[in-house]
Length: 261
Image 1 (tube, one colour):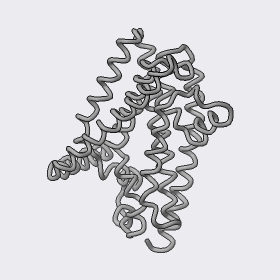
Image 2 (tube, helix red, strand yellow):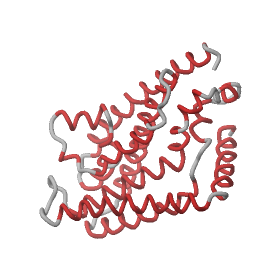
Image 3 (cartoon, one colour):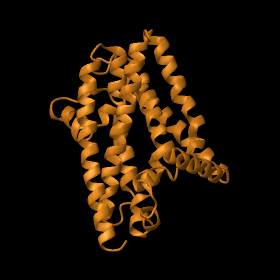
Image 4 (cartoon, helix red, strand yellow):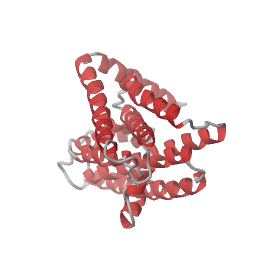
């Protein structure tokens, strides 16, 4: 209950803060729309010359774009901005007050800068996903929807773990302000079909940098019957990165407290 109260407190605080800067809010919505529109136009240009892309039809990629953009926006709404600011907070010594509180410092630092006003921007990927679903005529059984939702959640966990591991390097290295933005750009690769990656590159983008877990796995669970294989691969990738991120975070906190912030 304490965690829920804290989450609600920071959610209200974030909503109030965002309401003061409506211009920035409109620009963020515009940026979301421009990125999705640009990515859509890019793939449309490709499909003007080929009927399929590594076995993926135009509508398949629409669904992939919708899932990846929706996942990216959800991540940024709840934890993305907070994690992006973590290196700066570390080097300015702002963790001291957080470490004295009787709750997980990582929980507080992950939610203190939510962007809940971005929720309306989810409308574009939802519309694109609905159009793709209608075009593909996918049968949405309860089991398939459960598997899809589970893999979406798993992809967001993997994204969180990779981002946390990256920003935790800030305990040792300064000037990491651009690293979260680089991670966000890297995860844009999730909009590309898995089948275009061959050999070692597919393994790298599944386990070393799990971008394929984010959108490809959920979409494939709707299109094929390989849910359990996808779940196993996703669990391995997310589990590995959660373990690595936890180790880096704990080691970084020990270093931070040892030098007195």
